Image 1 (cartoon, one colour):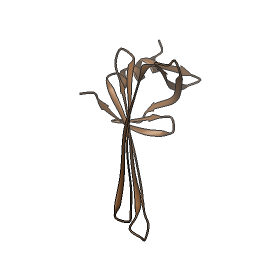
Image 2 (cartoon, one colour):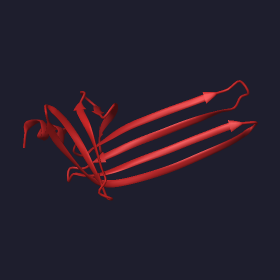
Image 3 (cartoon, one colour):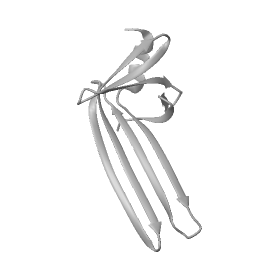
Image 4 (cartoon, one colour):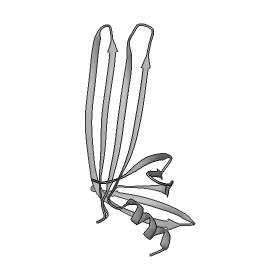
Length: 124
């Protein structure tokens, strides 16, 4: 196993990667919408993962509010590969589908995965 793979496994084992996207819009009538999507990828040292997506949306207008909340969970296994001087993380879900992302340790508490920078925390 290469040094890059061992280093990334050590960096990611027993960590949670978090990414939050918040969007909102207001119009002149006082109506608008708000959206908060939170991603949490729990990476365990046995190479299993739990991926949780929590969504909250609210649309307001005419004195009414329409909230929406949802939680999705996915499980599977993760692995690190090193190809052509690039480190990748591959997620294999329970339904055997796969997603593969370039990944990089950006320093204390930050992990690049795909095109996004995630916050990295120790699972407590």
